[in-house]
Length: 318
Image: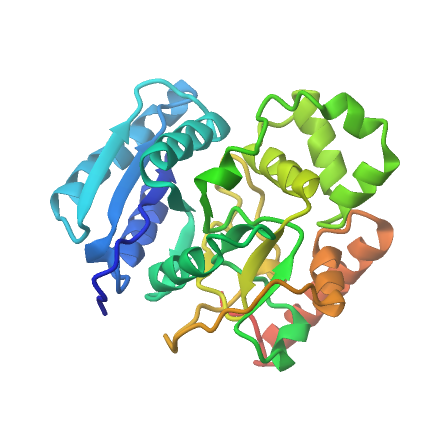
């Protein structure tokens, strides 16, 4: 499937998991628009001595992968020192956007459907001039409300880091130094506004500012909240997170309520103008609710999934 368009460049950030990097990059090369896409691979250096061998294996694989082609071009950035995921993504994405104006991003534990690049490029084209849209997500969680949802997309207040795309003019709105944080923490309205994307977000932002975590994503979501913009999500996911074993540097095991199935139909996606659906938004928000009711709901869902596994009726594909 090719259409002669000028596709957005794709960036993939990898670290020390060769098996995941191989699956992520191989799936991307199997995409319909891969041959029309410029691919940038960023490999961070080892953070500690015990990671050095694994990182070297990943970088050897990347060299071999790049030589095999399958894309319009492949650009490899092999860091000798460790920058960390946040710094790597901020620098890498900024550099590509300076040249291209738009970008599609993956990390090394994400499996994509064959129409991932088609969906992303179509969405980037459709929403390029829409001032309500902050980013495009390739991933969507298996919300119950989507079973009867007819449109191909929906919208939410929170950006996703599991396969996403954006434009330079949105990226440039982010202050990575968070110089207005003091104003934010003193304004309950701004805190509540950020929490529309999930009750965990104000706490994550506090952890970021206190040096407990190093996250580009929470700063990206904070800027989205301050700009009062939305992320577009597909009804059927084009991305599935493979890193559900807790092996990632920055992630714990992916809970079953976030696991999803990949699109297999490859029908054209029909986009629509931004309009928030409160039912879907409420269900989405509950996934990230750090309060007691959110925890109980997620625990109940995991018990239901285990029952389905035991009875042969499991819904979420592993």
